[in-house]
Length: 191
Image 1 (cartoon, rainbow, N blue to C red):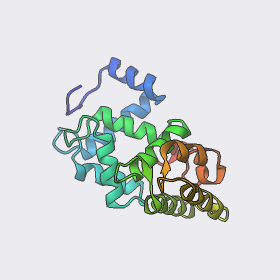
Image 2 (cartoon, rainbow, N blue to C red):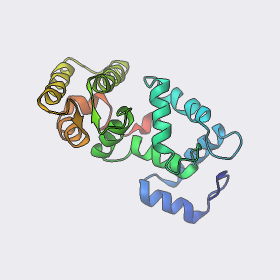
Image 3 (cartoon, rainbow, N blue to C red):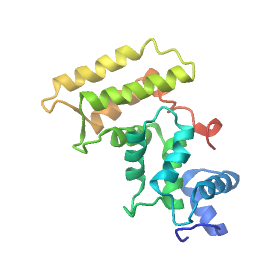
Image 4 (cartoon, rainbow, N blue to C red):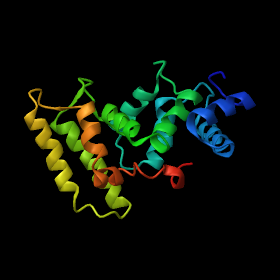
């Protein structure tokens, strides 16, 4: 597949399906959506990526979407190929909870130091609360998770929480996982 990715062979579709658990209909819809924002057929620019994700993830600010773009631009060419795009959607929609938490950690570790500091942790919690409230979830227990996360940081000599600590702590907290819609696939919102 070239950058434009205007057509997928049946082998390409089968590869995507085997790696993502998307159906052939979902792959076709993802390709259609990709092509609708990929104006120059060279892969998604940052602006095209923003236009796709900002509509679907209203709680993500421009800085978060920019960081997400950088994470998913795996070949670092400044464009998101269809393969990278499908990979991004897979992580967001169908990957295991631990992979989604790993992605969130990477997205919010903006200084790339391997730790979530107080501000970065706050930004994840803010996203979780905004997402939950927007979907009508009960967020009354969110404070206990936030307190536990921040207490973990205070006990560490490095003043932050590592990816492993974050995944371990977050994955066992059903309230937090539900707040981020990590149990649900985003099928109803995306594919």
